[in-house]
View 1 (tube, one colour):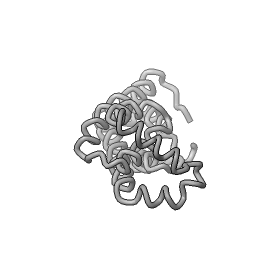
View 2 (view 1 turned 180 degrees about the horizontal axis):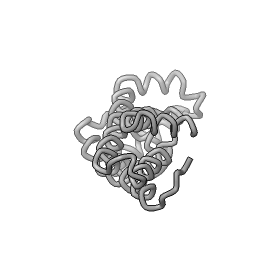
View 3 (view 1 turned 90 degrees about the vertical axis):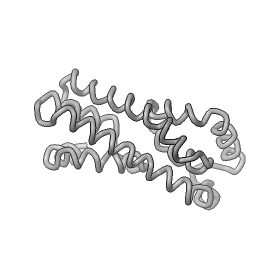
View 4 (view 1 turned 45 degrees about the horizontal axis):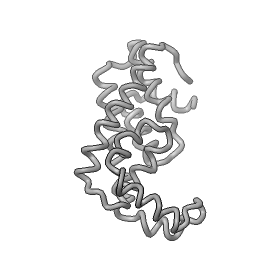
Length: 162
């Protein structure tokens, strides 16, 4: 956690963008804490609110689109090959796909509010064959609201979080 704080303070908005993109990709980056910390830095006067919003939203969307595309191009072959190591049996994958075909669009929107779920939603959206336009249409509201809420929590609570 401390290394993130150092990078964010030293490199500013670009580090927030970079780490959020990687966090959505699935690397161990605490997205919610990072966004809240950016909100704290905004309240402390280190960051400007408009730029913080732009870079956090952009970072999450770029990471989301990247993982969507990975799911679209490589998802099923990767799951077939390595899914058993993640306890994703063909039966479980079939159930996930069936459920996602029924509720997928709204799952994309509301999945951004559940830590950990947003990472898988991006991949599954791509794997399920959801069009990129539909994915973006339902992802953007979830990204905007969930990211802004975390940012405002950090802004108003005034705690450094790390």
